[in-house]
Length: 273
Image (tube, rainbow, N blue to C red):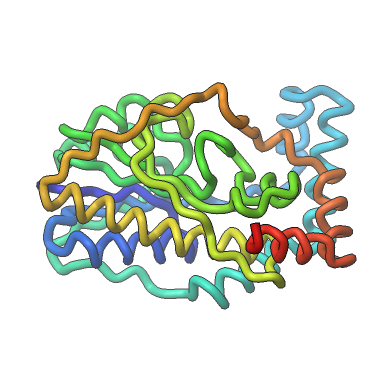
């Protein structure tokens, strides 16, 4: 059975890729890495935001981006990943092919995937996989979602359970990758082992580590010939969150809860339940 991984270039993506590569060995035929550039808040970017959201919503998005910068979120996230996940260079088996692309959905990427002809496509951290890419594996496409589905689907699925005072819902899900975002059959879920001092950044890193373990096991099972039937999700349970749902208001509330210690108390209480 032939496997291909579709992922991105961050340290969390490299960590998961290494876990899968260790599990699969020479069954891993290729890795396609999406090289997504950072988005600066330029004048042209502001115009696009304005056309999409209107005046008030555009001002909110600018305010949210500014608050995130003031809170040093990129630095804190990088530090948490460095301490928990670590930074590694991507190292692949000698016969494994590597493709670096701007988008996994672009025509050259689709051509590369078709050429590789995988039986199984393993997805983690790319932009939303479109239909043409999902059709390239002969058997199935799986995805690692850093959230516990179906309760927390979509975006910000480590932040929201902490915000909603449900730290036990921080974790990861291995599910079938379909056109229905985070809605495919579930094969495995895991709760992240949070520590009292965690914040949304370290909680995300712990969810990545826990998720990498169950993803590697699912890949190992498939490689061994297991029939992963999975469990159909009840999408009436939980909620799908969108990027636009997380604004500067929730960001500031979370920061206040971190600083006054209430998040720490929520995590400690969740471990005694």
